Amino acid sequence: MNRILLIEDEKNLARFIELELQHVSYSVTLVQDGLAGLRLALEETWDLILLDLMLPGLNGIELCRRLRLEKQTPVIMITARDGLSDKINGLDSGADDYIAKPFAIEELLARMRSLLRRAGSLCQGQLLVCQDLQLDPLGRTLTKGGEVLDLTKREFDILLVLMQNMGRVMTREKLMESVWGYETDVDMKVVDVYISYLRGKIDTPGEPSIVQTLRGLGYVIRK
Image 1: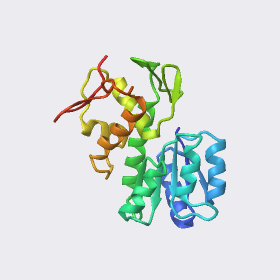
Image 2 (image 1 turned 180 degrees about the horizontal axis):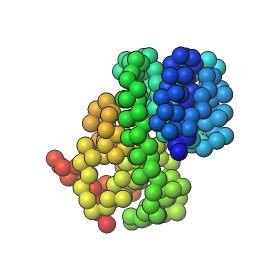
Image 3 (image 1 turned 120 degrees about the vertical axis):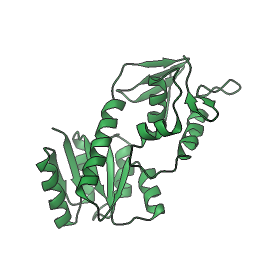
Image 4 (image 1 turned 180 degrees about the vertical axis):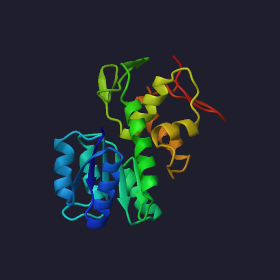
């Protein structure tokens, strides 16, 4: 049974979501304050967090940022604010997905299933090695020549997918699906941006990039 932390201060909506999730066999803990939600998120282990943007005590953006300093628990941000800048702020703070109110509970459940599947697949596997890179999927660490590199969650997940599929060309669509999920509204070009960020951290100056571009096809890491 997946453990879900629901951080939502709108009482009627919170109760509705709680009952619907329990009906499909999720274990749900409801918190209606941002500071209390952050404390529970850090102190206990959760499979997924549903996080409202506007909360008393601590807003969802700041809560997610503080959470990401210590944990990579999957987060879906729930909010009444549906502007592009709000989505970008939510995703940049570390949220994995974003759903705007009002929403159909079926859509929320589908997004949760997709994110839980991705989280499970991204956490599996043994140590992955390519050149002087060593990636630990379970510990979510990356070293280059023995030195630990600091990657964002997106950068790590993209590199993980590429290293799990070494020698296989991964299209932008496949990387988007694997890292952001099926229902994301993120522009496909964001993959290129994150690949650029990643190269800046893992490549050795003056040497060919570890992540190769195949024009018109996608990206690949060769064995």
